[in-house]
Image 1 (cartoon, rainbow, N blue to C red):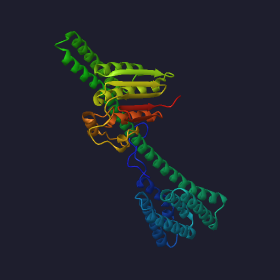
Image 2: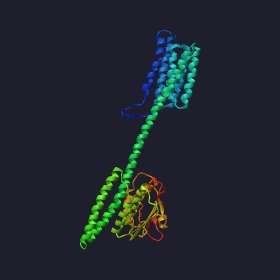
Image 3: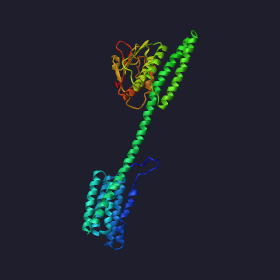
Image 4: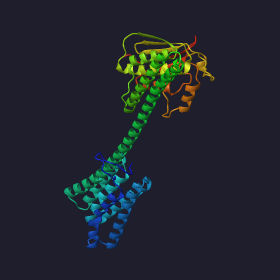
Length: 404
């Protein structure tokens, strides 16, 4: 495989070998042309005709190989080998230098096991022709080794260029994949950050509006909370842009309790078992943020429970379980469904918006991109997310991470 354009590590433009660089080896026929011109080869017309045929067949084999016409290139190579063998056996002398030319053509046209077999056979034929022409061991070794090494070196160089082209293409694909992963990370972080923060701001703004006339002092405190939450959201968005955003589990639990109380939901937090490690705390912090955001935005609940046991987190509420739209079969039956990461890199914005506006059925009645984002995060660490209505009423979100 040849690439249109490859750049080496130092960044300078670099073009791989093309047919012009290979065709120049036809000058190996200079010795045969000299013998024909000086009258060594008789009849001269046969020598010149044979030399022209050799040049034409060599050019055809090389050009067809570079244009990826392997069948015709192989046919031209076979004809070239036959013509060179016949003329070298007949004339000898300078015609023996055309065997390395045939070796080069083998390195261009053939590949893999075929080129090795062909070069070994050509080397044997070369040795036989030189020996039949009266050549000594030194001549036999010189022409045989020259034929074999010329083909092997050319085949190796072309194979090396193919590897360079493949590495270049792979590097481009990896760069594109890295960009895609970064876009997904940022979109997921932005959704999780702003979904929670804007929900808290809306709830506190409603409290300010209700308290403005009858309790100005409390309204001022709520307004101060809005300012604090807004500044915190700005800092978190900046951290998300630079890729350093990590949700603290303890901090998220504290903010979740404040947000639930401000929304008129009674929070209950239970923590048992060993303390999760740093990575698990970060992931479970995202689960708390997403689950509490969905309770505030969608559930209509009056009570929310957050239970942490080691690396297992459960968030449930007592809101209604029937969403306004017809639920899937498993939702209607009151079972909990595992949330799987999205199979594509596209974002279901319209679906998520519909879930945010219309779902009244629990923590994730609409099944938007927030839960898919959590599933993707936890799946990378070997974890799992489940969500669904409870038989006794309410909604439950559960997240599991493997124990270290």
